[in-house]
Length: 184
Image 1 (cartoon, rainbow, N blue to C red):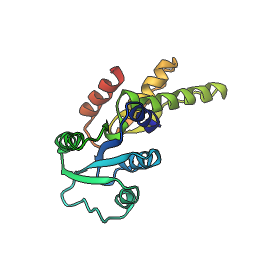
Image 2 (cartoon, rainbow, N blue to C red):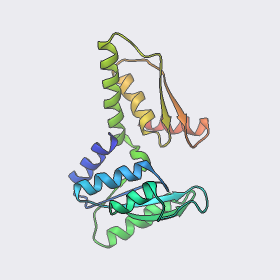
Image 3 (cartoon, one colour):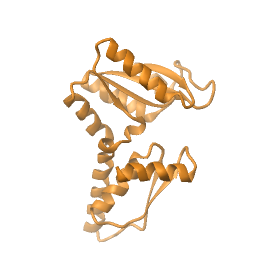
Image 4 (cartoon, rainbow, N blue to C red):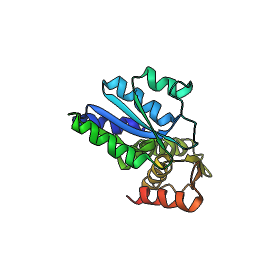
């Protein structure tokens, strides 16, 4: 959902290369590599090794899919993503490329529109069935799903609580991330 909006924006801006980031077996990175391949765009992944020694470019799973999809992989240590992305973007621009950066999880205002749309569909279906939800629970990693769902529900005038189960950060830090995205 998020990638529909982000890749469309990249193409509209004339990008020829997509850069994104995530953990070493990131589903977001796999989906981004797939979307880039479908659109004929180069894809570069900055993979964060959150557990020392966990990155193996020959591993199965998403690492295997990254290679099949033609994505270039660059591994960085824990908390090394900002510097890794900055260096990669500079290298690509110096090589004459037009890179477009998609944040981890596709979590920014444009990417969250995918989950706003999903929330509107949920509200429409629950109203049509006259069966409101008591709550919506989602994973909350990079925050795009959580903040997009919250924004979509509130835009539709729906006050259903949205609970995010943080998959990485402690409650206070994750709540701040979601608030920042929701308010932005």
